[in-house]
Image (cartoon, rainbow, N blue to C red):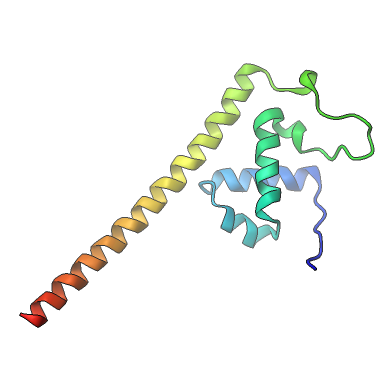
Length: 117
């Protein structure tokens, strides 16, 4: 069984920021920090709803995050904007890779048609 990695609030925020700064690429985060996809997904959702306060470890406090802890509308929009920008960056990178691969395949097909003709 895999060993559970304990993280601090600061580490969780660093991981979320790394995720956002690298175009929402979970594989990069998993490789760099050794955390699971499910954990990253959970932290992103908490960050989206509560901001950095949502990443605090609340075990044993007897208190969960409530409506009073939720972000204001402006801050929620800032967080959502940041998440969307990360997704757009990731999609642009994927598009670039796919275009390069398509170009390679087109050249390869054209080359094989010349040899068979």
